Amino acid sequence: MFDSAHPPELVETRFESHGDRMNAIIYVAQGAGPHPTVILLHGFPGNERNLDLAQAIRRGGWNVVFFHYRGAWGSDGVFSFGHVIEDVASVVAAVRSEEFAAAHRIDASQIALVGHSMGGFAALVSAADLSEVACVASLAGANLGAFAMAAADPEQQAAIAASLDGWAGPIRGMSGAELVAELRETPDRFDTIARAPLLARKPVLLLAGARDEVTPTAVHHDPLVAALSAANAPRFDSRVLERSDHSFSSDRIAVARILVDWLRTGCDVP
Image 1 (spheres, rainbow, N blue to C red):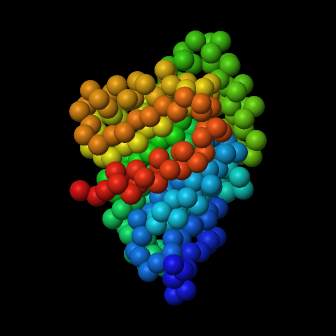
Image 2: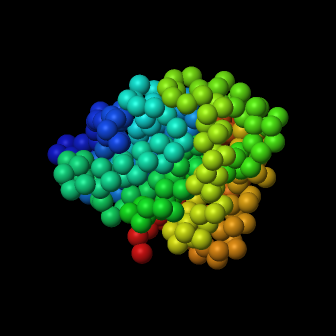
Image 3: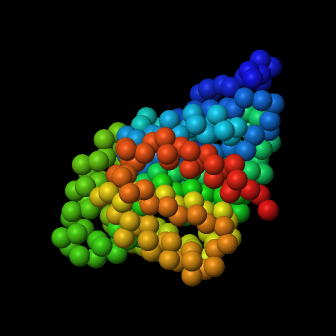
């Protein structure tokens, strides 16, 4: 039933991270709320924004916050992988602020991170590091630490840098070679596997595609599943969709259903 007093809304806004402004939109769920809220994180460079998932999540009763990192898609500043981690922390803090939460019907105690590809990496690392995040879902999530390890080989280093340059599109900032150097300088900072003991304390959903050639499951998904199992994580769900590529092109409706069901039943605040 339509709530004319508290209708669903699409709000344009901006967040600030370390002095730079980042473009953002908020899908506000219907109802007086306050509503649990997903911060939806896109990959590199962000051609697949997963906004169909944002709409499905909102229909499920959650708000969705979507933003572009510094140096991406017209946001101010310079892009780097380290900046992505900082930007997520800045947005989590802003969304949970008393004024912002009240203005957008947000339950500041129930914030979830959902990310795709590089955004999955950012969601996992940030959920491990930020106590304010209640739960996390990674869709075809990248372990940038694995790229850092692969880049120890000069040929692989050149190939990864070339791939990043080729995908860069609307990214302003570091070159592919500079991004690889950033990974190699502090590899532990970008390793999702090392975060498993911290992630094990929270509800975690890991989705992957068996046909994914960008973040293949054997390198990016399976080792994290094993690490969470070894950490005795009591509340994590992992699934591999057999028909899916990196963008889940064959299974968009299935992914939406899995994600919304998990948010409703598995992403709870103890």
